[in-house]
Image 1: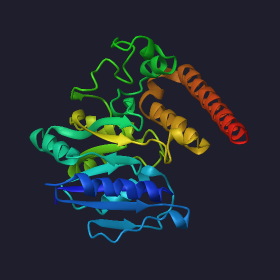
Image 2: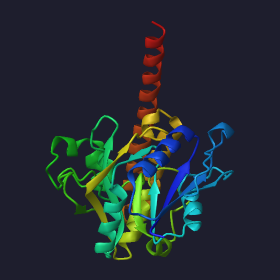
Image 3: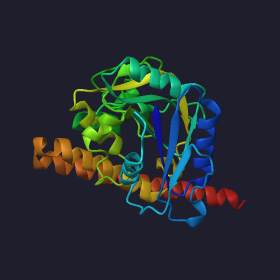
Length: 294
């Protein structure tokens, strides 16, 4: 089989159904299976499908995105594995084009894809540099937004790389990660110490250590609704997970080399931003409630 598509469903039954349907509607010339790793905590949100192309594994404990993805990967039989978010919409011929690139470039260890948000805006998360302390600083203070073409300060979002050009990058988004199954197993899979957010950065880092390329593929695209269980869902657990994931990756790869003082500053800065983000989300919810009452 060409491809195993692993999707984690966590209380997103409707979105997941939409994603699966979009795969059915837009994919031809590819032999594939879809594996649903379902760790929903709401029994009404458990994914159900009778199509023979789909295998559902429900009742999994909710131990995070990486753990569920690893479980799904163990069930995969395809030469390639695609980890796909449950809040994405596949576009026509995207999977065939992505697989053709992988076959023609065997040095590729992981391929991400051009990703657009629901409003058509480009999702910068689909092509990124590693969050080194300097890259993280430039991102969080907004220097890459002020000077988007400057390589020195645009190292995290890679704003200087044209979104319409395929390029080698450090990491891609976990919303769409295509890789040879053999490469995935050589890395040891997703780090299950990361509950949610940051696991894609960590996996790409370990793929690069295998001397494999991480590629941003611009010749096809998907739509990422980015909100089913993500940062834009105004979910405080998701916001907490994002910052904790970034801190974990920082400590794993950079913390020891920079010393205790730098780590204290970095941790303090991120936790302050997390608190500010939580307050901002509360204000948004309050404003929505006030508008609803008028």
